[in-house]
Length: 274
Image (cartoon, rainbow, N blue to C red; front, side, top):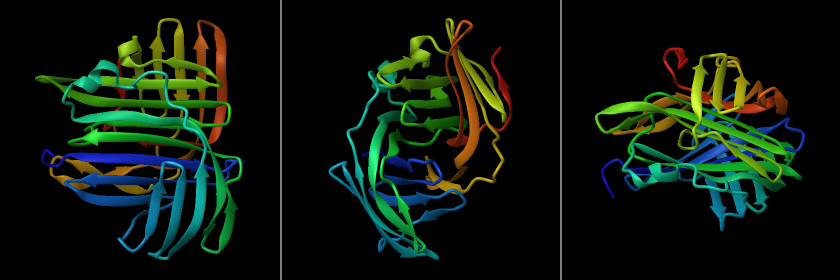
């Protein structure tokens, strides 16, 4: 294993009514594991005593009693729905700073949790799983995920070092039932606008506009890997209101408002590509 190489997996869970969601990250850097739990208003780096594990990709065991947090339960995951194609395409063949993967665009969730003495049912809930591996998180990036029973929109834009320069790479998959649209860079997708209010991407006649607010509410902080170790702090809005419109020409294919979407925005300045 090369110095400071990391592997991480991100699991997201939402109740059927979208009123509660949480996520956790299981990661290893230089053989040292880190487990982080993300709630709407707080994040936790868990001790070795806390139980948070996934068995056979189907069962999640949680038994956490620390840092003023009590969270216990067992959740069952349904069949994973992977993207039709490797989300990185041929870029996965290169020795890149960070490689992204999507293990499940959507799957069902069942079971229940007890959070600080409050029982939360996840019957007919839903989930999403992705992963990252490499040497460091990108210096600048945006990540957005909106998840429902009948659709998934997941979008990532990152500053990618390549050869002696860098470029902004785009990964975007939109699932609608059995249909899937890929607006990624290697499919001809282009970034038009990125700022703290919205992002616009296009591929031929297809256009996706996502509207959000970066700072409302103030996002919890998470640990992220760099070339020096797990020592960077990033911000994740696990639950924020957003809306998006996906069109082909003047035809609206999908238009939704989501009160429980997720966003990481790590661009220092607004960026316009037009």
